[in-house]
Length: 178
Image 1 (cartoon, rainbow, N blue to C red):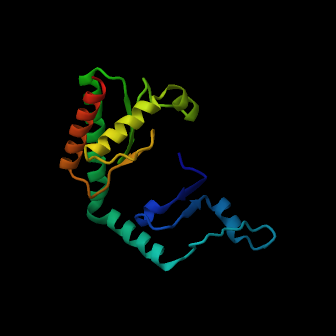
Image 2: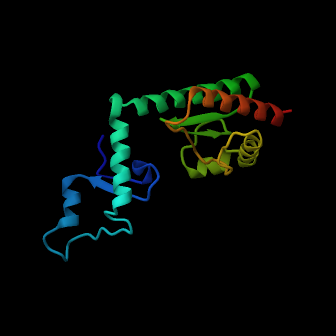
Image 3: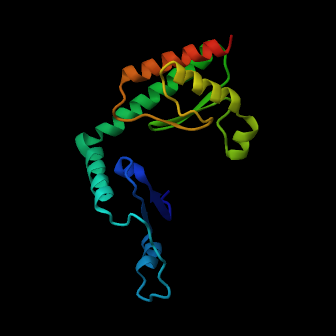
């Protein structure tokens, strides 16, 4: 299924301030409509700024190198992280689920992946989540210290980094469940 419109943000420029919009021709044509009274305004602070544009080009070129090496690497690490976290939950007899897409993942302390924000707010243990994140930081593993905030794995991460994160997560959860 192809979307009608898509937006992309700073990830395409490796963190530089940039955004992109794309979509079906019949919708995109509204931005260049010959009648100015029908034209849709597309404005932005960094439109065509050379530094973010160069960063986006360099990032996209790197992502395409070696037949998708970056994507294979982060996908592999993401899968390892998800499977490792799920194994920790099973070993500790603890209820938690991991939602993952590629290198991005989030742990939910509930019996299912949330369907929407209301479901998350109604079932997720936010206090436990925040406590785990703070305990991981104390142990030297940085998890953004806000409950339900996704985690991201980068190309710079290694298998050893994932192993260390899983080890620290097991330690932190074990201590919290005592």
